[in-house]
Image (spheres, rainbow, N blue to C red):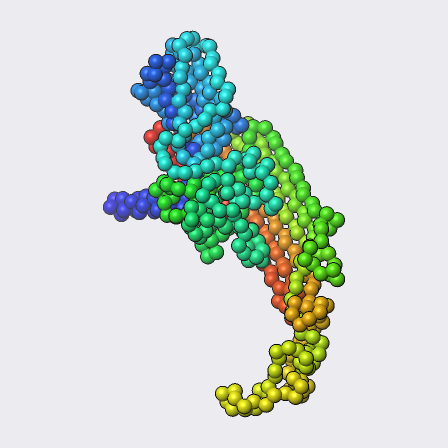
Length: 462
């Protein structure tokens, strides 16, 4: 028995520790039901319904008319309140986020329960149980604000105190194109992002494992100050991206963006003798979601690809044809000395006649490699070679989510995301002289969430 109790305590402590990194992804709605005179109404039946999935949760008000409903996925809800001696009241268009507990109060009108008072205006939710500074970016904003690479991290600057997000690493190092930004003067390394409440932070570079596609994101929550204790382990912003689930109706989207050479202008600073660099940008995508079993089981899936193929004009310095053979005559500021002459300290060395290295002293391996060195195509000894350097960036992402509503107290979801990113940047000096850069990233991310409500005071989330 002692061993069993000890094991149970260890499991509970471990669970408490891991919640620092696995945060709840559902919202909590609190409120109070009152009569016209402001007195609380006890034992009123409160039903909250998700208007897109028709799933419901129910609770009775307490002695003072207050109620709390937890474990609510972000979305649009309707609250129905019924009790004897008062009209049935229906509050529409309640938009709930996962940033913290929200409060909505409802006043009942005396009358028959068969009569209904319907309030259709969007209900402003107040946050009265915390002082954190936060905002939620909804699906419509995510999908309609233009971002060149459809990266939802770019929209972090919608909140005050955040500097404009920017990329920091080359595509070969960070093909997911993570954004870096400072929050309230803190280092970008202090920002932290979660993916459906789970850690999405690669510590070595301070980037995310995966950047969630816009089409897959239901909501993005950003908290920048006065963080609650469960998120107090960072001094920057905490961003939580929540994935999108299916609804009771089948909905889909199909999109494609393309930009080719015909639409590209010439760089103003490109030399007239250099051809216009080529660039083809293609970005297709699709999403579909709907019910497998109405009011019970829902599916959502999406795909997004980005294919950038082109060439980038680069300016560099190459030796003159004479210098490749060892003849440095006439090059300003160049004086060559025989390395095997003079003292061991480098004093008293004999200069080469005319700054010409004899062919007998040329390393045969170096001479063979230098045969692949391109000749200058611009005048001068510095920045005398311009070339269109080929590159290609291919990024593909696929995501799927399955939601199950067992009953008013129990729900679960399973989601999986996959990224396959490949990038390559050639060298302007060719494959023999220059090395170029290449990167290949395969990223998997999956989560299973199970929520059960034992009562208004005990909610479990695994």
